[in-house]
Image 1: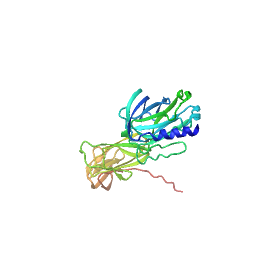
Image 2 (image 1 turned 90 degrees about the horizontal axis):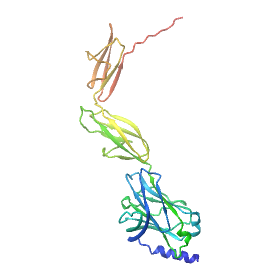
Image 3 (image 1 turned 180 degrees about the horizontal axis):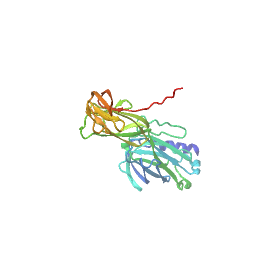
Length: 326
């Protein structure tokens, strides 16, 4: 009897087609996989049921899809009675209930004789998924454009027992995330300077298209902006898995600035011109300048050479030294 069952299984599996074929199915429903539900969803199946698996929304962080089929404990005694089939390129998305569709068969196997079976389906090259005693990789890369998939259970032997007919299985599906997130750069230009060229480097690599969101490995990254027309900027940011980070950059006028620190009764002269509001940053032209602090009859002069895009702080401090002689 066992030999006859194995022979029937082999014959049935050999007869399945690898091209689009018409199917009449009993669909249990649709499992939608999206970033909004990373834990996934599940549906109950019977021995003749199907389930459609649909991708939704932003899927660029998906490297694969995981399918997990849970069977009743008593299924182990009937292993080899059912087959598991996967299809893609469905002619239409089937609603719940009986439906007629066409689809291309991706994979077929005898349903494993265990309570829980897990399949992982790669969605892109370099996916990094690996088969193990607990995980099966039933296909090569399946392009997201060929979704939805159809997961199907069906008998592969004659004379299915009443106990199998009454069994309820549960199929769960969820995304397998890559270790990536994305960053979106938003540059804000000063009103007095229209949009001018800016070179952007992330992790020392030049960003070619500044308007596109960039996929990056999760973790910390460096950002450098270099321009002849704005102040150079540098900062660090952290990318989280499967999330988009907005990085806002306020570009600054590259005119050099001088900040003054001074006693309350001091007067400040820059290039022999009295500074009227020394508490505010003072814009100057690049090059050589002379700063004079005057407190009553006391004055001190210091030269300073300033460069484009930099800020300088010039401070006058008054200190008192107290010493004790023996």
